[in-house]
Amino acid sequence: MTDQTPAAVTASYFDALGRGDVPAAMALLSPDVVWHQPGANQFSGDHSGIDGVGSLLGGMMEASQGTFQLAVTGPAMVNGEFVAVPVRFSGKRGDVSMDMSGVDLLTVRNGKISEVRLFSEDGQAEDAFWGRP
Figure (tube, rainbow, N blue to C red):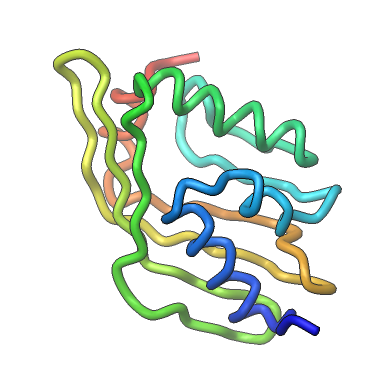
């Protein structure tokens, strides 16, 4: 049996993303996952369910011309079902680029990621990169 602690599930999720294995990462999401995307840009707001999150991530890859990248930059910090992970994310779109630090806060219940909240180092720069709604 695989380890389904919040720390293990989160590590598996980021490992899958790092390998580019999106199906494996998506399989770790709860069917009723809620993803809270910050800011005031075309992707901001709450995205529900695996299809909603998949559409969000697909849209981000399309908008960034396939260049969007996310890397874990430090150890995960666990507090019960909550796991905070320091990250760095970047992307390019034509001659516009984004590269900044952030924190991803994941809630893990019953071995699945049920909620994702993202925090960005520079919300205005992220909004400018993604574009207004």
